[in-house]
Image (cartoon, rainbow, N blue to C red; front, side, top):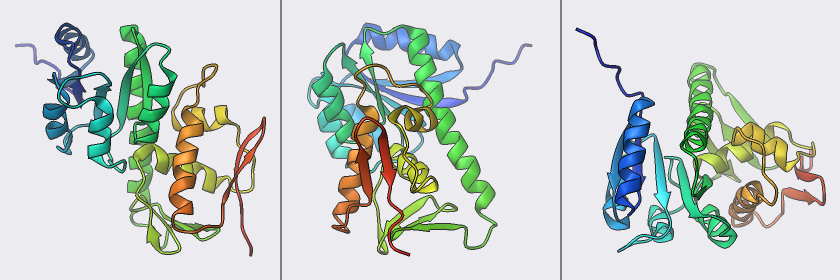
Length: 242
């Protein structure tokens, strides 16, 4: 008897379009993903608190609770990556979703292969970070300390002046990459390729919003700005005083 392949990752799909949900479930099942679908924001939120999911696909316009309300309820410091599904050309919704804690977005209508590529990119970067953290567990004092910001790479925790920063998975990766390259100007596209595993498209503000979220959370603890915007070039994490 031929043994059926086991699903490698579990995705939560929150979208009120029943036909689309069924199509995506069938498609992703063929691609070896298990999908649990919810057709409204309230039931999706209840499921989202389950830590067993590897990724959440979240629509914006839904009954009972919309996608933004789901993000607000999650608190902006969730560990499960979230890919927002937004209306094409709706830049304001995209930016709001990122500000509320979404990791990335994809505009509807989208090609299935494009969705699959985006899902795999997100899961790949999460897997890399987890494997790096696992490799460092047995290394004593594996920490990075730059300008009052400390990273414990074994536990994947970042603190500022001994206050723990509540970051989403993508915000953690953005800040970690900037800390590892402190004092160096990093272009938005470089950060996107390293963190999001994709090139930025024209007028894409994903990295701007993630960097802005991290900066805001740091400033809430320490009023001295540690992240500088270099107009036309990118961003730099300042080394601080030695």
